[in-house]
Amino acid sequence: MTSAVVQFIGSIRLAVPLLVIIGSVLIGATFYESEVGSAVVQQEIYKSPWFGGLIFLLAMNLSLSTLLRYPWKGARKVGFAIAHWGLVVIIAGSAAVIHLSVEGMLLARTDGGPVSTLRVEGDLLEVAALGQETQQASLFIKDNGSVVPSHLGDLSLLGYTNHAIKTAHFTDGATIDNPAVRLSLSSDRMGQTLERWLAVAPASYDRMDIGPAELQIIQVHSGQELQQALTMPSPGSNAVWGTLTLNLPDMTQTVDVKSSVNQTIMLRDVELAIKDFWPDFRLDGDGKPETVTQQLRNPAVQLELSMGDATERWFIFGNPAFEPIRAQLSGDTPLAVDINYEISANAQPDAFFKVVVDKKGELHYAAKSSKGFKSGPLGLGEAVTPGWADFEITLEDYVPQARIERDIVPLPEGSEGGEPALQVATANGQTAWVPWGEPTTITTQAGDLYVAFSPKLMQLPFALKLNDFIVERNEGSESVAMWTSLVTLMEPQTGELTERRVWMNHPTWFKGWKVAQASWNPGDLAQSTLQVKREPWWVTGLTWLGSLMVTLGVAIMFYGRAVAKKLKFVGDILGAAEDNQDVGTKQIPIFNVFSNGAGKTAT
Image 1 (cartoon, rainbow, N blue to C red):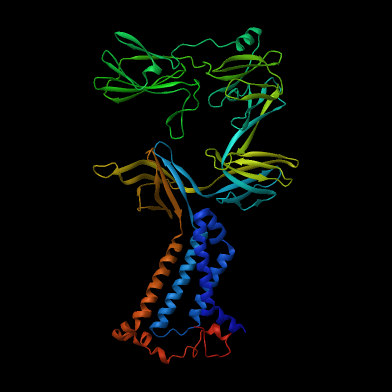
Image 2: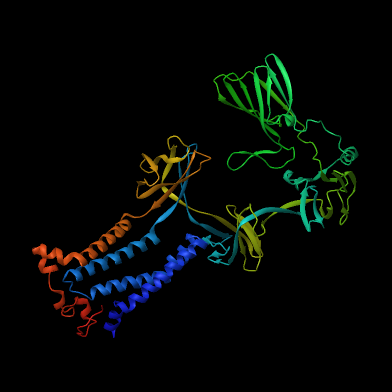
């Protein structure tokens, strides 16, 4: 019975269906990977126990198939054995690569210090509670938003979104006066209703841009301030974008910004060009200027000045606390010029709805639109038509002593923007969204849970410093030929410093780790992304040895007899007549335990 089982495991009757199953799984995994990504496929298929069992059974089939053909005499038998043992070695090496290798991305900058934290594939969830050990799990996110695994301790992982935003609401309970209101904006023509919170503090919630108009809330402390807030604002200067005053050694000139944008103005020997204007200036994630809103909150102007062979670029801000930024584009001598920028940055927008809280805590409103100005008392549930199309604004809630509570809310499907977030549920069914990279506290009846959804990181045993990033272009064109990272690798324990060059398809090795060029940012040449991978030397050796054995075995099977005839001194091993061999006449001693003396073996 035992001998029959061993022969079946080593037979072609098992090998054929086993190969069909494994091949079908690999084909399906290829299509599945295009939908969910390699991280999920690695976790659900290649690293799963059932797939590992299939591969182990294939290795057993190959091994027993080879052993049952002992003694290996004749070129075909020797080649068969070497090729099959080579396949077993390759399987062992592949399993070691899947389960033992580490791979991730390292972001380095020339203007930054040494980096040693590797961003590996996948994300990490950590859950901690008072008096309990911290629980951790590696997460893998599918394209449909489902999460693997689905539980961590008593916490259920319900889903994931790439597009979540932070919102806030206000509740009663602050120890000081902090008026907050919840307004609803409805439009029958547009078929929608929006709700927004406004609060005197924090300052970022005292006004909100809603496109063509602005919502505001202010608190006044006297009757005069109240009367001023409820009165039509006086018309401002015609210079709505402000004016620039240029002080040259022999003259002074004032220039209106709005009427001069994208124009060149000659002031004696100085050429002035106003390049751009931002009402609410800030730098985006790539360090480029942009405007957050169209309200004059932080106005800024970009201009260029030229005189002779000298050219300068200026950034001038409406906030007098910000010094102008000057950059010398050409020439060696700075221009002898001083520039002042004057603008009323707090000017009221063309359309607004303002909630005014008086010293008694009573509410009033002031609204401005293209149809005119109106003001009056504001009560709960009362609708006001500010004059913006058919919009109505209703006071839904009023909290005199408000404290802020922040929420994470997923955007509707198909929306753009926002940040990644993970939806979780506690044992009692309480749900919450946990933003990526920000620890979150979830208050439950059993106590607070501290949940962190963060990138999966690994500390390297060495540090890397990017000294320079070089981009080489093809002669006579702007097309990129090659990009190279010049790095210094540092071993902290011994203090060893090694300088290396890394470029595409030319990695370097350091202390058992491979460092390769992965990508670069055309908009930021101070940055380079490197792939760092650890693969033990013996794992690489197994895959190379297995490949060599398969190649050698196949060569012996097809060409062994011809070579044996020429090499007489190995003829007694490879040149024996295979047709007269009885493979059952001699067996490996270990099989004597299972054998009943049968002469037939598996093929």
